Every structure is written in C-alpha cells, then in structure tokens.
Length: 343
Image 1 (cartoon, one colour):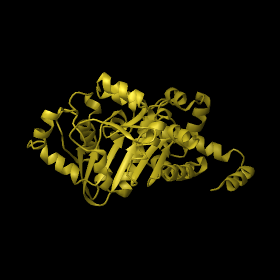
Image 2 (cartoon, helix red, strand yellow; image 1 turned 90 degrees about the horizontal axis):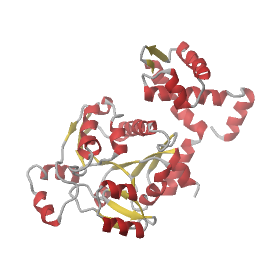
Image 3 (cartoon, rainbow, N blue to C red; image 1 turned 120 degrees about the vertical axis):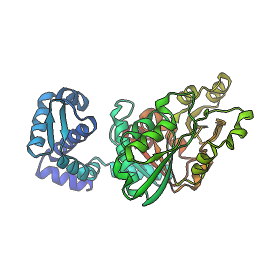
Image 4 (cartoon, helix red, strand yellow; image 1 turned 135 degrees about the vertical axis):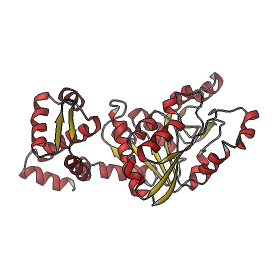
C-alpha cells in the first residue's frame, strides 16, 4: 500500500490505521511478554491503563486474548491473526520499503527490521529472535542442516525464541563457532548452541577450549580428538548465525590487553565480528587468535544471518557489511536502521 492509498483510506475512515497499529502493538507485546499484567503492559507500550483496558477488552471480545491470574496471553486465534497481519502492519509503517533500502545501501542479500530500539527496550531482542526463527523456517532446506552459531548477549537472547517447528522435516545440528572458556557462561557459543538445540529439538555440539590461544597451544589443539570433529562440522556447515559488536565493548569483553586496546582506539576501530576488529572503512585492524569459525570461512556458506540492533551499533553494523559476504541476511531494529539510512 503506497502513501496515496493510505491517505485515501484515512480520509474515508479517519484514525483507522493508527487504531489498527495500536491494537497490533498490543497483540505483539502480549506475545512477547506473556503472561503479562495490565500495568506492566501499559508501561511497556506507553499507554494509559484506561486506553489499554479499552483496547484489550475489544481484542478479548474477538477471541484474540485470554486472561489468567498471571496475566494476559494470546489465544491460538490471536497468534494466527497477529502473524497474518504482520506484513500489513509493516507496510503501513513503511518497514518493507525501509528493509529494501537498507539491503541496497549495505549491498547484502536481505534485511529484516523490527520495531523499536534495543538500547531502549530489551524486549526488542526477543523480536529479533522471532524474526530469525521465521527466516530460518523459510530458508532452511529439508533434511540435514548444520548451523554454526556464535556467542554474545544478543545471540543468547534470540536463541530462546526459536521454535520446535523448525525441526519438522529437518535434522538440525547446532555447532559453536568458537570456544568459550573464560567468559560468561550464558553468552558462550556453547551455551547458545545448546539453547537453540533445546528450543528446536535439535542436536548440539560443544567446543570446550579457550577462546583465545597462544601460538604454542594453538596448533596441537587442532588435532585433539574432541576438537577435530567439531572443526570439521564447522568447515562443512551451510549456515552461520552471528552478532556484531562495538569495538570498545568487545575489546573489554574479550580481555584484550591494554596495548591492543590502545592501538584499537588510535586506529578508530568501530566494530567486531568473528574475532575481527575493523574500522569505519571495513579494514580489519586486529584478529583475535583462536580456534573456530573465521570471517573468511563464511564466504562459502549458503546463508549468513547477522543479528544486531540498537542505535549505538549502527556504525559497527554498517562498517561490517563492507567486508561481509553478499549472502548476509541482516536482522536489526529501527534504532540501528534509522541511523544508517539517515547518513
């Protein structure tokens, strides 16, 4: 629907589009937060409890909501309606057009944009996970699929939104793209792979080695019986899912020494992905020495999903796409997308 059609619709039924979008937002938020009480939901949506009560009563009368002592949740019909109307809501909001613009701007295969800004609302990361699940459901072929996953806070969050339906007619194996000993357990690639496998009734492999290695220990580990089979799975995988981080935050998280941190600041590093720190132009400044998936490895993968949101990551996302494989599918939010497209 173009702008002219939207204007004509508004002239016939004033307020129709805003009313629809408000109710759609309520359905979407209940799905993300369920079970949720009215007060928490009104704060999340920045609506008065009076307005929310009125709209929720309408949705409940239509059989789209159900209530319990714990709060509101969607009925099966409510979820069906919400999923069916999402493309319509996105067209009203201009997201479909914006997704095409962003993909062209970044010169990658496709972009998906969810509403909101991850910096301002942690719930946005759940939305990123839902979109990732839907994209995987559409793009993964039937049969065996080996999926390499990276670690990070965003990856840990999106992992919880994958659904068992992904395994219908598919055998899914989730493989960590790097070791993780030494960092927060929940953010480790091993943990992300295990969560994704649990959510989808798939299988997970583990790579229990330090993420960063000295030269003396790197090569002997490559042939360890517990390491070699996992590395072989990584090499022959067809799908990768990874995050994108800001250089300053990732240097701190990876325990980079003060000398390298100083170098990265002076060289104006803006982002990190796959252990590679890069500047605004996409030139790699420093590569963490580690076992696992490297940036050059994903060039031959069939699908590469980059999941990152928040206006503070806009520069890191935009610069990474200068070195990303063309078959990259970016899943991001309005916070990041708006900053990139306004440049």
